[in-house]
Image (cartoon, rainbow, N blue to C red; front, side, top):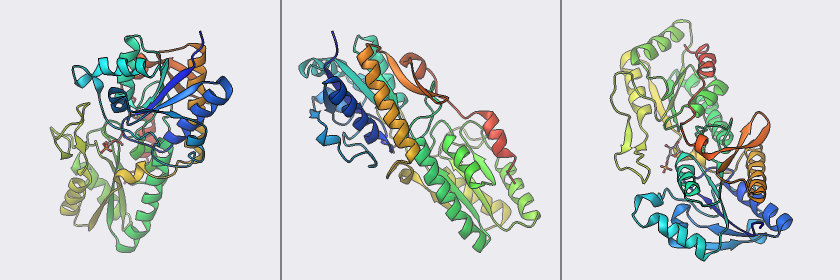
Length: 346
Ligand code: F6P
């Protein structure tokens, strides 16, 4: 029996391209398969509370270039409350949702995987500006974040050069330094600090002094928010409060690095934290197309009855992979790529 009612939700941190996926799912499912698409509000929260509305062609018209998500999002984990899973199952039943497309990162898709094991017909779509989901070369949103960070690094270059300063720029990347590495290479960073490689302040200052010793008056240091000094036990955090998935709010390592550089080298240093600017606004053309391809592929999987899968980009092909494999471990930065970045340090 073919699927006629599809639920769709966006969970976790928002990212550019979410609306492009929603639009693609609705267009394909409604126009080509005669399905009804039900939009679930605020990720898993909407499924625990039954906040669900039909999404038609009109609702998705004009949303392709819009950042954020028209469905809204949250970091709700239904498995954190004793009756959460039962409420989700109940609401799926009440709204007669036969298959569920979940768009999210490790947390949202981890929950999707658990429901899939409980018999819910789930397809996942990989989203996160951090690009740290396994089994896919890219998640949508990452390219936009990298473009924003690269633009910021370019801008910091001109002001750094005018004032003979060190500029430290902190970018997102909780567990993986993909944005820092790629934007750092693209922006010609003189040093890049990532969570995967604990850093030494002595080494950083040596690099900067070496560079200034060969006549350069300024330097650019890119730091991922999850980077930490080798000798430190803990990450630098903004707030110790944890979300429903146990994550603290990171941010501020840039200040620590900037302060130490100024103190140890005597070179005037300034710090910029890009924060949520990297997650806002319109997606790049690459992300719009990737998100659209993912949305179409997700509907194809639903129609073929292939559940417990995530759509993934491998090479130039969008293929199904097992959700279980995608959420097993995070995809950290390829050290070969980081070695390329290191050629330009100092
Ligand atoms: O979605 C991933 C991410 O952007 C991380 O890079 C960052 O640590 C986190 O989300 C910030 O989350 P929030 O928007 O909840 O502060």
